[in-house]
Length: 352
Image 1: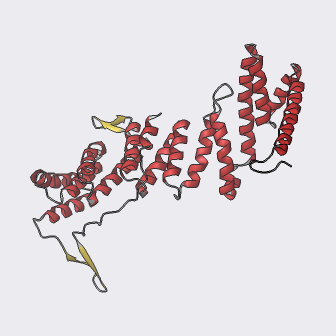
Image 2 (image 1 turned 60 degrees about the horizontal axis):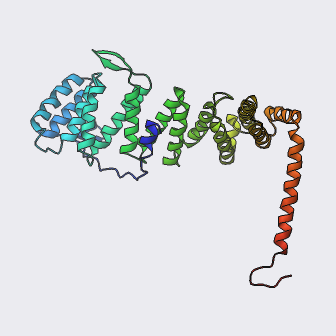
Image 3 (image 1 turned 30 degrees about the horizontal axis):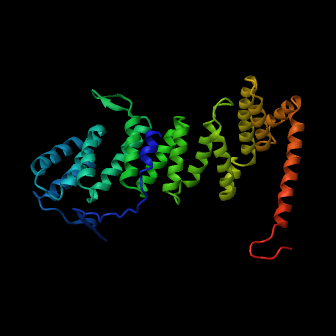
């Protein structure tokens, strides 16, 4: 079982109860003549005033100054049990991220997530980790010696998995799930992509991305097939998924070309895979296995080119006549069994 599969199967679908957000430190009132005017502000020197100053500096694109202000406050209040500590840590992480050191900011976000799970800052920290993870998966490198030269795909993958574990059934988990599945598809890891899309559909059955996930899951399973000499299990699954997709979303199936034509292509590929297996047995003089595989191919993919080739091979070895006779014998035996059942007395009743 892959790393992603192991991590994702433990995600339990739970409802998310959002905590009530803190009251804003600043309040404004709309006046017809003066416009927006400030009606309430934190008292200078209070904790709220320090946090408000930090937010203002970040909004003014002065993250270094903001970090200096909040750093000093955290140093003084870190062990005091101050109720504003979780939000202060998020603000410091936001300032650090704005300075271009998002990887270092993850330490503060992680601390909030671990130590303050009931705080409104918890959701903010998870959301910021989601944004950083998305950037990493879209190619942003991690800094080393002030240069972005280190690949961060692994960190991005881990962050998006954590979001789904920490806030299952939430909007953030939904966004993380589809982003991760699309990432696997983008890098052509089709086995992981198929698993990720399947998990997404199970965890978010009413998502706006469901149609996209089901469609991509079909393509991922088809792309897993690497040729006649490889396992064709993905093709069987893709064929079943196509039938479900056409039934659920007929218009979308028509627009995207998912239907009979795609099923026919899959049928040809699956038939070619079975024919290759039959020839492998034939080259080793295993005639019983060869005959069995050819019969199975003709039965499962009768319209494929491979089935036509299979019929020709069976004719050359005289197996087609034997199969026809066996089919006739099977029908006669089945009919005899039915007649015997009809003539058998019913338990507890009289014989006819």
